[in-house]
Length: 107
Image 1 (tube, rainbow, N blue to C red):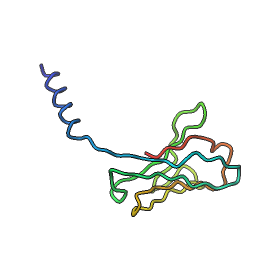
Image 2: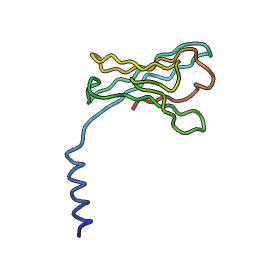
Image 3: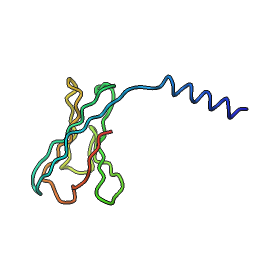
Image 4: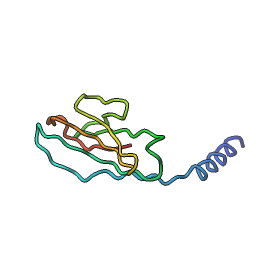
């Protein structure tokens, strides 16, 4: 009986915790080693001024790897910025290397 009450309470909480957050990343890009790239993430459903956006990547046949957020990054070549007035987060990568080949996601 306690488990049933817990499940009902959990379902009730999910019903009222629903929100519509959408993250739309920029189109795929092909670059050469040494180039720079700017990836964008358009955000709707929450405020950039009160939330942090993280970037992760997944290289071929690898797991997810954290890239960075506003407080720092995993590499000095990565820089995360935002345009809060337009709700867009950016990931700038300089001096691209072949090891940067991956699918990048904002979260």
